[in-house]
Image (tube, rainbow, N blue to C red; front, side, top):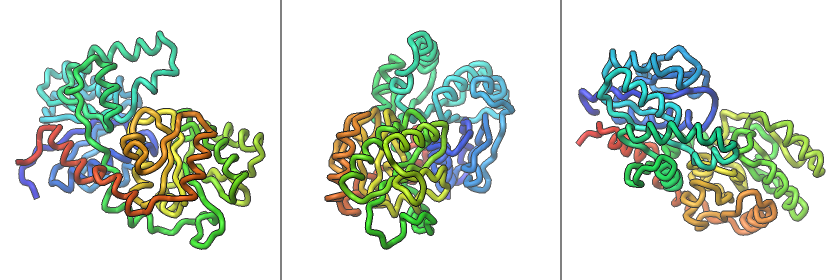
Length: 376
């Protein structure tokens, strides 16, 4: 156990069940395991993930629901507490932290964690709105002491967008593989399709039901596969895209629900029990940063297929070594990859090799080094 370690301050918004919140909790667990104490400065506080924080983590609500509006409250806290380092969890948090530090006239070291490909996320927006997003990035990012990206693709994209040298952005893999992962995966799974004895294949996808995940392409691909073999598709997650998926399924002749071909069970806190029992995991995203659920599937020995989207799947799957990569939005290629992988899956031991860099301990230690507080 370390002694007299500085407290680590983290600035974040916990607004749901997303991967960023889950990775932050994993990271905080890793920090606490290394003997550090953590102050978690919160914009929003509505997330079940907060219940998983280690004892002793000090949660400090900043009294606003919008990250940029938290700037003044954050500045007051920085001026009063003078922490040695502050980790900001997303783009908006990073920009707000730069302004807050300036207001507080603080010397706190500032580190920003970026978990998504900003160019891809901004692509669908019109030019004026995209320009408004880019301007503060280019103005404020040079004042951040260390930028951490979750994948090489995110790092390359961030450096280009912010007009920074690539050496200014450090890559640290997400703390996905935790000591609890296997135990969580062994928990009972209530879905009838995932019983131990079955005579059909079960394909699982997971994520928010939104445009980024491009589940419509997966549904079209699944329909092709279902014409060739007995299989079922589970898309686990909640979001505004649910009704559109239900409509699409009806239009192309898929039956919904546990008695049908496609089931949408909503958000599941016990995701790992479902994932571990799948015959195949599919990531159909249009863009990512470093997709955690793909990493988790491989860690659980589940074969995977993914789109070659920016960024992360190509790195996780080692260019296709650990699972096929297909073009974004191509349901025909996705169906062919699903068929081929179900016919000839890689052994679980080989799949687990792909994610050895994504452990909680390795990630926490790398972040402590980036934060400038790692023990010698």
